[in-house]
Image (cartoon, rainbow, N blue to C red):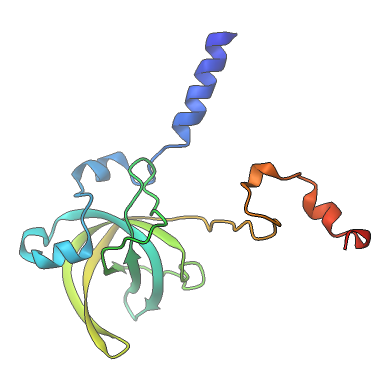
Length: 175
């Protein structure tokens, strides 16, 4: 029984660390780059496959394609999920040949993309001109929205609380 339980535990741990981009794409993609780094040496990277991710800023549907603007964040090397950190490497655009619903691909959702460097595009952010890196999508993963634990009364981790807390807290005699 011991070896079987250990095998089950290991398989659960390993399955929780599966990368969302296929292994063949990851092996051929350049990793750890930022849009600002690529723009500085665009000739070297044009046509190369890169792996990036971040937080969606906006989604625009044009007549023949969808363009998603992303604020780049470093990726977790095991899962590929963008880290929620203060570091970022600029903004980039991802072009899709198909329709992407702006309600689904909405602001602040996290996205991991494997795409081919297709050049740059200049646009305005406020009154400032900004040069975006442009990727042509090869593979994308839209992460599920993370739940906030704002209902809890204190800053303890979620497992600290009684699972019935939301139920009994709503009773009138507890106010």
